[in-house]
Image (cartoon, rainbow, N blue to C red; front, side, top):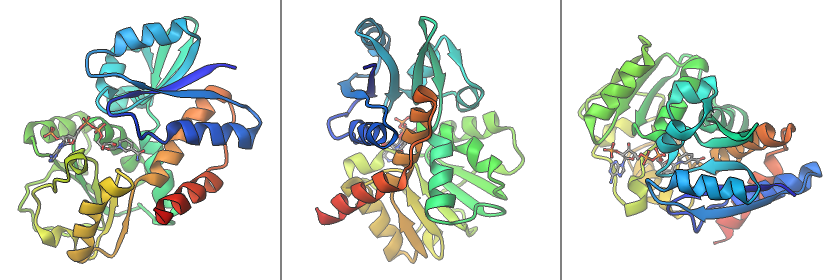
Length: 270
Ligand code: NAP
């Protein structure tokens, strides 16, 4: 059985092993999938050891997505566009980097939640590896405008300039425009922080947090209190991006709804 893993820090609570093992059962392709704790700067060494042990595919999470992009011998078009890698595949003795975050988010919004993105105005909070991965697929889905806000403004400006698309602009924290979607793609929830943005941003919007479970609660509760029309966490995105990685590695796209429903039921029971 080939070996797969998710690498990053913190990694203890990653659901990726359970998701990939469930996909393996559903598709009749059993997989061995582990968690590996890897800190910033440690990816090259960890990947070399993993390949030597028989590792054939790796998911890359916080804080290693840019490092993975720099280390990949080759990047797919969507990883190159994102300048971030969340999926590595071992091909002909080298790691090939891809990015399935954006397609995972778009599938969750449009297929699982049945929310159309076409001609919608989107406010994106964050400019890290996850944000880099989702801007291209959001634009491809036909959104009308994308405003990007980040705690460190320079990173938002850089992401805007890399997009080179007239629909994309950096957002000012006090911006008064209204948005159909507010997408939260920062790690602020890990420390229980809220991004410094006006309450009015959330009024009437669909608000989505890439985080899931208790770590998304502070942000999504705040959005609801501020008048969000709907709120959702990133559990569906997690399952959908994993399905795209599974497809890359095993050549078959697993059904996602049974896995998502089981994880959601477990989360709701807690
Ligand atoms: P990253 O590359 O480390 O970037 C972190 C981002 O969060 C940056 O924009 C950073 O702003 C911001 N940030 C961190 N702490 C903050 C705080 N206290 N207040 C405001 N902004 C803060 O991480 P990433 O890969 O983009 O991941 C971001 C989050 O998305 C993670 O929590 C991850 O779990 C989640 N995610 C979920 C999925 C999914 O499938 N559901 C997929 C990918 C990522 P600065 O530039 O100012 O530091």
